[in-house]
Amino acid sequence: MPDQTRLQAALESLAPGRVQSLRVDGERVSVILDATGLSSDGQKALEADAKALLTEHGAGEARVLLTSDRVKRQIIAIASGKGGVGKSTVAANLAIALNRAGRKVGLIDADIYGPSQPKLMNVEGIKPTARQKTLIPVQTSYGVPLLSMGQLVAADQAIAWRGPMAAGALAQLAEGDWGDCDTLVIDLPPGTGDVQLTMIQKYRPTGAVIVSTPQDLALIDARRAIDLFTKAGIPVIGIVENMAGYACPHCGEISDPFGSGGAEAAAKELGLPFLGRIPLAIAIRTASDAGQPPAAGTGPEAAAFIDLAGRVSTWLTDGGRNAADQ
Ligand code: ADP
Image 1 (tube, helix red, strand yellow):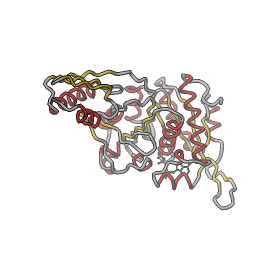
Image 2 (image 1 turned 135 degrees about the vertical axis):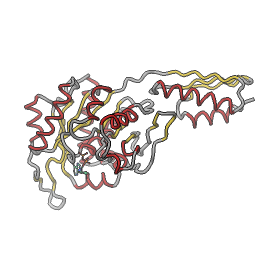
Image 3 (image 1 turned 90 degrees about the vertical axis):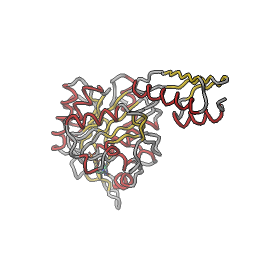
């Protein structure tokens, strides 16, 4: 006769947090598993794995029932016109700050040109496992699970991905086992290429956050990214100005190496909400390089991201209104 305690432990390690009930009745074993968030392939795989496990433990008759409360997931695309403006930094810290604000957030790093999230989230070198074809996101110390293009291939291969290959990889990330996550933050590659198009057409993000530096040139590029979303009918939640205002670490004087207010002026001109400024701060770069996103800590850098998350969260809750009016 199957041993209830050992079966419970084996099921828990097969499907952590999903075992809702287990009944051993002689040789007949019935189990109810929560399949929330799994794709239909993922559900079939879970059911088959659970049945095999019950049989392995001596069940003559194995009954597996899957239940699911469909989670309505909101997807936030983080985009920029060009690289190097801090899009990945904003994506990681926004995900953490939204999580601190009470959402269940997952992070997808779809930047094929420079997948940097494993480093930023301090899980470099850790590969996600898979159940059948469904990837299981890597847990991070910041409460935000992660799937990254960087986990799928060696870093030097990523740049060669084009068209259908890049789209296929995005699908693997987006259709991972996101469990009870209600919000997915997606770090898109810069520009307006294949990954962005697939993202927009196939997954229909709830909204997009555009990251720009105050420079005019960056803003010209940012406008192209905005245009892509607007034409596809994806609402732009607003523009974030990153690397705005440099505070000298010695005297505290604020200077504006990239100019100031460019993104805010552009947002106004385009009729889009301005979501705030993230200062150019050495502390942001050093903490990011060390895999300690500032949003997880305290201090002014954390506050800037928590502020941003507040605006985005309000927008999501209000169904797309009042991002900048708090
Ligand atoms: P992108 O994703 O747009 O290519 P990253 O997020 O990788 O840009 O940022 C590029 C570099 O700039 C990284 O070294 C990052 O640590 C640094 N960086 C980003 N935002 C800031 C900021 N507000 N202050 C200081 N350094 C920043």
